[in-house]
Image (cartoon, rainbow, N blue to C red; front, side):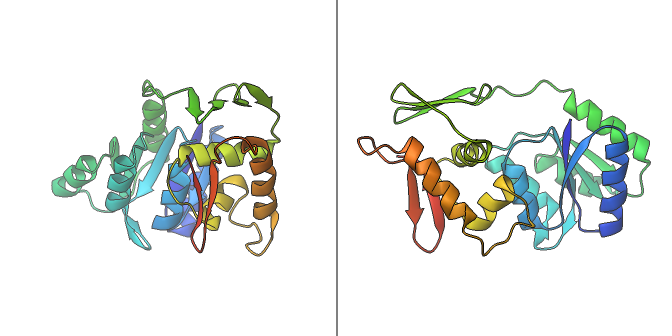
Amino acid sequence: MRVLLVEDDVEILRILAQGLREEGIETDEARTYREGQTRARLGNHDVIVLDIMLPGGSGVDLCRALRDEDVRTPILMLTALDSVPERVTGLESGADDYLAKPFDLRELFARIRALARRPPELAPETVDVEGLQVDLRSRRVSRDGRPLRLTNKEWELLEFFIRNHDRVVGRAEITAYVWDENHDPFSNALEMLIARLRRKVDPGDGAPLIHTVRGAGYRFGP
């Protein structure tokens, strides 16, 4: 199981991450609205634990934005406020569960496991874009029937592009998925990786799929 923790309090974040790891649960961490949105969009978590008060925006707004973007990962909201209107607002924004601070870690872990046991919503296992066929489970990729061999990093980049199909994405978003937040932002590794992937998925005789949007980032699609 993999859980995304979106919490700006460093000490609470440390306690939660340590406790989950001791339970055998992998964790990713985010401390701001923007970072939480970037990581949650990737869709590779079983549960998102989301604090309501975040730098850059509220957890309620983030939850609503993720649901509007069709991110269906179960969300457990944390808050210091336990009033009925607060709970109603959180649940109406798209959260699946609600827990007020202070809480017992055992209850939090039990709720996380309960959310993770819910049947997943149906999602496509294969994608076909302009002759590029991708099996997201087996990681098999072909273009116009020709199998493509991708490195792990090339696959992660392609998977990110597919999950963000037809949306302009910036360097920071891509880097956070393929590497992590500690990756050197001045490195040219991203450009080199995109160039390698382009050579494989964008043959000269086919419609290009990876587009550079000058001053903004990249877009994947016809």
